[in-house]
Length: 90
Image (cartoon, rainbow, N blue to C red):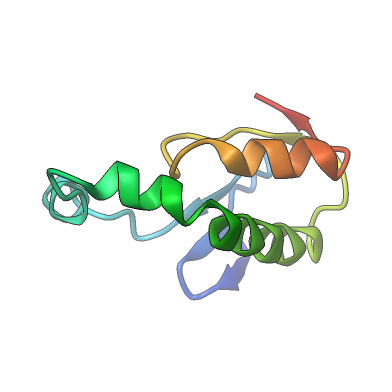
């Protein structure tokens, strides 16, 4: 495994990038807020798109093309940004 950032690793068998160490279930549950979180998230869509584009550029330092799989990383819009950049998305 080769580190790209302090918590990002690449699988030596399949080249998938992943967080390590993974957050615990308790940490994940604490990160979700009840109530108005999603509506607030949607209201900030333009800002979020800029963040997704920035994250895509970070990814493209290591991978210029291929397939992207988004597993519970937000509202799913990262895949739209990836598709626009020519990635195959799942």
